[in-house]
Image 1 (cartoon, rainbow, N blue to C red):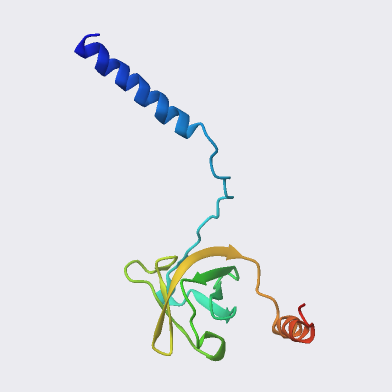
Image 2 (image 1 turned 90 degrees about the horizontal axis):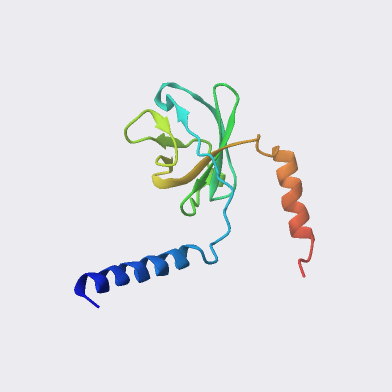
Length: 137
């Protein structure tokens, strides 16, 4: 076998190995989540917001559309404050690269998606009370 034939055989074997790896069991496809953004945040395009525990915030834009921003970590004071800030760093658009400011704490956004309206406060409090009442065995 000549030197050129040996190299060609090696390339064919390597290609077959790589093809075998990609043809094997692949992880299941996750449904694609469409990232969302709210433009013109610094000029009053946010109408309302509601905390969803310490790891998420529902945000309503001036058109009445709701978005859910999941946070990278716990934002401990979020459920207890009346005002929050939004930092966009660059373009005037709130998206997954933005940050929520709560009493001096920076809470980076991990993901932001379009959402339905958050549960009403009455319904939310009823669900919390039901969870506390059930023993949870």
